[in-house]
Image 1 (spheres, helix red, strand yellow):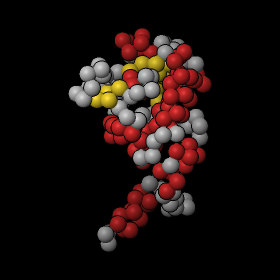
Image 2 (image 1 turned 30 degrees about the vertical axis):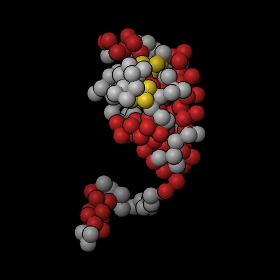
Image 3 (image 1 turned 135 degrees about the horizontal axis):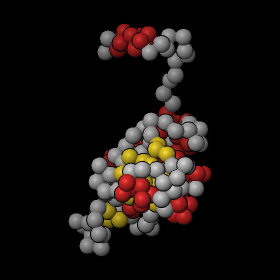
Image 4 (image 1 turned 180 degrees about the horizontal axis):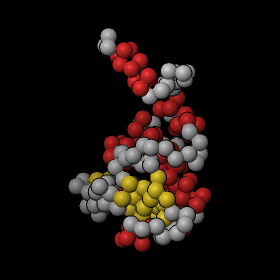
Length: 177
C-alpha cells in the first residue's frame, strides 16, 4: 500500500500527465445516467469485450468475408464482456438451455428476441440495418429493468453500438470468440 503513491507518480511522469489535473473516479459512472453522460453520444473509445464489433451495410456478407461492404462500414473499439452479458441476461430472466427445453442454445431472454442473439459468446450474431431500431428499443427497455453494475455497463456499450449503426444506416456484426 505504501508503494502505490510512488507508483502512481512514476506512471504520471512516464505518461506525461504531470501537468494535467487529476481525475477522480465518479461513482455516477456506475449508473445508466452517469455512463450516458461520461462520453459523447458518438464517441468511439476502447473498451473491448467478448465480441468484436463491426458495423456493416451487409453484416452477413461481412461475417463470411471480413471485408467492408460499404464506405460507411467501420470497426468499433467497444463491446460487452462475457460477465456483463451473463449478469444482464440473468437480470432479464434468461432461460438457459439446460434448464429449459424451449431454448435452442445458450439462453433466451423472454421479451427480448433481438438481444437473445447475443446469448452465446462463442457464436457470431448479426443485426440487419432494418433491425437496428428495434434492437435499440429492446436495449432501452432493458435499461429500465437492470440494476447491477455489470449489466448497466454492458447495456451502455450495446446502446452506443446500436446508436452508431442507426446513425450510419448500417447493421451490426458481433464476432464471437
